[in-house]
Structures are given as structure tokens and as C-alpha cells.
Amino acid sequence: MSAANRHQVKKVVLAYSGGLDTSVIVPWLRNNYGCEVICFSADLGQEEELAGLEEKAIASGASKIYIEDLRMEFLTDYVFPTMQAGAIYERTYLLGTSMARPLIAKRLVEIAELEGADAVAHGATGKGNDQVRFELTVMALNPRLKIIAPWREWEIRGRKDALAYAAENNVPVAATEKTIYSRDRNLWHMSHEGGLLEDPWNEPEESMYTLTTAPENAPDTPEYVEIDFRAGIPVRVNGEARGPLGIMKSLNALAAKHGIGRVDLVENRLVGMKSHGIYETPGGTLLYQAHAALEQLCLDKDTLHFKQQVGLRYAELVYNGQWFTSLREALDAFVQSTETHITGSVRLKLYKGNAILVGRKSPFSLYREDYVTFDEDDVYNQQDAEGFIKLFGLPLKVKAMLDIEGVGVSHYRITNYSEFKRD
Image 1: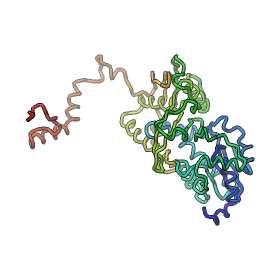
Image 2: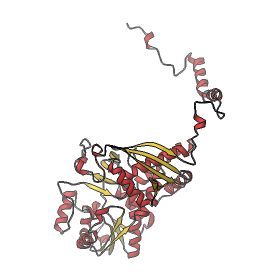
Image 3: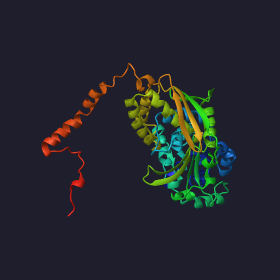
Image 4: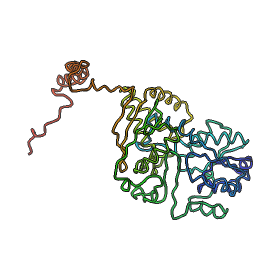
């Protein structure tokens, strides 16, 4: 932002985590924009990371800070719909950070409007995905707000520079040059980037993990968990009715104890480069697997197969920060229509990093034992299969007959090289 435009900013609301980047942004905004800085922190389940946040923000130069509990909204309006869609980015990432950003940015806009702020600011780097997620949300909800992204303006070029700037401005930070990881935690997951992870050949150090037990150190005895769903939403764990928060906490604890939910991924960022990250999603891994198992029972073939395609596109939208778009809303409408009969129970066996599906049942199950039995039944006449196969294979038969009439052999015949003699 030009110097002239900087002077037009009188008040800014900063998405504040208390980590290294946003900690140094508070004094940087005051030093470079001469504006009032209001911080906003969303409680999405960071636990101890929220401790001392208010004191730290004020000490850094903020005039006030909002700390709001958004955990229920996060689960019910973002996490569960994404899970119901079966959205998984690049086969393994359960989108924990991606889902959280539009909610944070939405509330950031609302607080900016409440406070009469000119601008909002975030600590996302110019190399990452989060800058897109934050800014697309602001553009969708209030494009009149200016957006300040310090990583695209300041002279700080890395975490060492940021640590030095923090020291100069007397801002205490937890990161050190020896153990520098970029982390994001919420009720759904914990992500780790940077440090030795920048070389994808390196095995992550065990001390890096914060949520899950190492699978080799997990209990030697398997543990069973039963999850009940109603219309695609988890409602009970082991027969005990709990709200969304209680369910996530209990499943996180169970899965983490058994070393479940670790993912090592080299992913394609939206901005065009690859990055290496480690994700811990213990309870979410159980929910995704259980929900998918119930869909196997309750969705017909065509709907299930089409929904798999929808899940891929849904994941791209979430990952790319396109939550507040017409397409995501349209896909959501389809997904919700498929969830009507996703009611039932799923049983998983937890053991040494694995969640093993061992049972599922539903009053809306389309699976019928009397239809698939090898014993005699009155539903299916096996002789009917002959006519079905002839009709299903008719295009293959017609093509082969045309090939034979033309060149004397089917296009798909494999050449018998044993007939050829060597010179």
C-alpha cells in the first residue's frame, strides 16, 4: 500500500493469533500506518494457546482485543458440512486450516464494521494459501474494507527477521530460531510446517507432534468406539448423547491415544508451489471414516458415485478460500439432500495408528442380506444375468465384429509373440 493510502487508514482490525507473525504485526502497523490497532482472536479450540492473549496484545500496542468462542459455529457450519461432502484435498488433507479461515475472516469483517474500522489485516505470508482465504472472504462480505497484508509490504523476509523485530519492540514470542515450526491448531486438527520439514526426505521428529501418541507407543490392546449419526451429523459416542463439542473432544482423545490421524503431505498450494506439511486430525479421521461407511449402506450407486466427484470439487473450493461462493452453496444443497437417510451406527476398532471399520447398521440401509445370499432366494433369478450381460456388452461385441470384418481380428486381441521366430 502506498504511503498516501497508509495515511488514510485510521483504524484496523487484525486477525490475531498471538504467534510470531501477528505479534510483530501489531507494532509494525502502529509504526508504519500510525493507526489504531484492534485485535481479534477466534477461539476455535486452540486450548492453552489462548492463555495470556489479551495481555500480550495490549502490551504489543493494541487498543483492545476481541476473543470470541466460535467453536460451535466452526463445527456446525463449516466442519460438518465439509465432512458430509466427503471433501478431502489431494487424497489425505481433511482441510482443518482451510475450513477455519472463512469463519475467522467473516467475524473479522463484522468486528471491523462494528468498530467503524477502515481496514482489516492478517498475518498470512505472500507464499501461502491463507492470504487468499482471508481476502476472498473480505471481498465477498465487504469489499469496501481495505486489506493490509504486512508480509507483502514489510522488509521482514523470514522468521529470523521477525524474531529480531519482536525483540526490538519488546514483544514476547514463543518461537525460537532453534525450534521454528509454523503451526495452526483448532478443534479439528493441528498442522506443522517449516523447520526440518522443509526437506520432505526428513522424517518428522517425534517431539514435533502435539496431539497424537506415536503409533508404536499406543496401547497394545485395541479399543472399540461406536458413533451414531442422525441425518449425517454425529450425535452419540458409545451410546452417550453429546453435543458437537463433546463429540469432538471425546473422539479427539480416543483417536489421539491410539496414534490415529497423522498425515505427511506434500501438497499443491493455490499460489503455484508445493509445500510439505504434517497434519494431526485424530477425531476428524474417525468421523470421516465412519460417515463414509454409513453412506456405503444408505446411498444408491449413482448418488454415491456422483457425490465422490462433488467431494473433490468441494475440497478445492474450501482449500482455495472460495467458501462464500454460489458454487459452494449449490454443492452444499446437493450434499444436504443426500444426507436425509444417513442415520445409523458405525463401529471402529482403534489400534496402533489404525481405525479399522468393523461394523455399520442403519434403518435406511439399502443392503439386503436376502438379496445377496448364495442360498436360494425369491428375489433374484441368476438366469436373468445372461440377458443383462449380453445387453451390457453389446457395444463391445459390435466393435469386435466390425474389426473382424475389416482386418480379421479384434482390436483388443493380444499378439502372440511366441509365433515369431528369431533370426
